[in-house]
Amino acid sequence: MTSTVPALGTRTAEGSALQAVLLDMDGTLVDSEGFWWDVEVEVFASLGHTLDETWRHVVVGGPMARSAGFLIEATGADIGLAELTVLLNEGFESRIDSGLPLMPGAARLLAELHAHEIPTALVSASHRRIIDRVLTVLGPHHFTLSIAGDEVSRTKPFPDPYLLAAAGLGADPARCAVIEDTATGVAAAEAAGCRVVAVPSVAPIGPALGRTVVSSLEEVDLAFLRGMMAETH
Image (cartoon, rainbow, N blue to C red; front, top):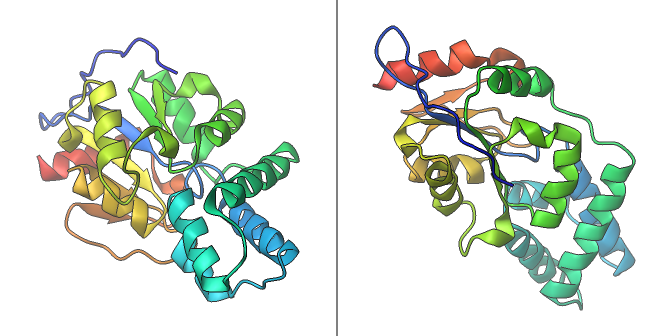
């Protein structure tokens, strides 16, 4: 899904420029991290296994192959990765068909970025089939492009998805603001050289150089993002 990229001139009074905003999906824009865990619990229960609640912090934010692979190994379940991936995706799709709530502040932020013609990308470790379903909730017009976890050879925590998104928008990664909710996603964005806003969902994320931590998207708007970029350039 690609559209014409608007002009990148979003300069602040200090001369710094925010060229693009790259956003994670699960747990950042949509309140779906709990959905994934609930589906994982249900699928493994059907296989005769109980998931340990502490494993939730291990699988959150990761690509399907890593999360599913970990759970197969941890439980010893007699199921292959490919079969489990299908079951998890189908279970998640059934959940979102019943309604998918947005995170507080998400709708307002997306509308503001769109109104100011800020190039925006959705960057997720979820598969394309899932992203396309969620885009119907978020509004595909809010995004210039989207990157799915099954469209890159290495997904988060590797920098590839964010580097690909920046390139697709014609933006310098260092001039891109990334919004993420997990340590895995933050690691990917920082490895790509992006400036990160962390909005922790399931597990805490500590502050670091080049990283801003907030408690909710309600604290984030275009002025906030532009100011954040100005602080480092």
